[in-house]
Length: 200
Image 1: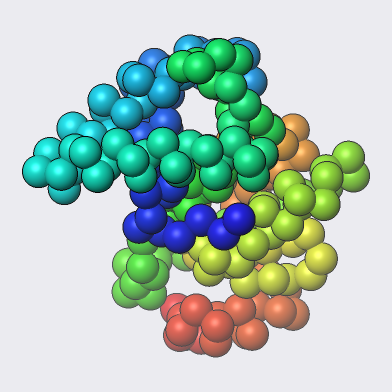
Image 2: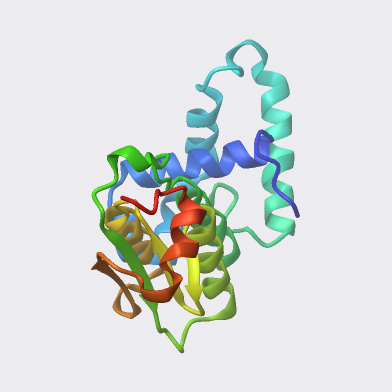
């Protein structure tokens, strides 16, 4: 099932994420077992209190129940009784994607560059293909230049965002960001990519 950005299904996941975030790091520490704390009633109350639903609660209730049914049928959630449900691994993957999508780097201004290249390297042979693809796709989305396989570079300070990305994907031990003032023979191409003057 493809989850559209502004659909009720997407809003359900965002509300689940809000509830989990409010609960703090306990969700991350407990993993799948945290899903047992979620209930149809509580989730519905939080979601219906959000803008756009107060004037049409009856219609919201029908759509909400139908959306939960689809999530169950598509394997995103699993009910333990009529009210309580857990997020499956597939459902947790959606929340992870929301977290990753929220990571951004500022636009690059070559006039304010500190002259330091951030060279990102990773070597994680045990990565699953899905995690590897998530990581590489996000690095490319953040605007890194590919120096070679598993080596990327950016002139932007990115350490905080990379730390958060590796925390979310649980791959911190295999990822490093190295500072360098020179990039060797590929520096010309990298400078052109980022629009940095050669006389900098």
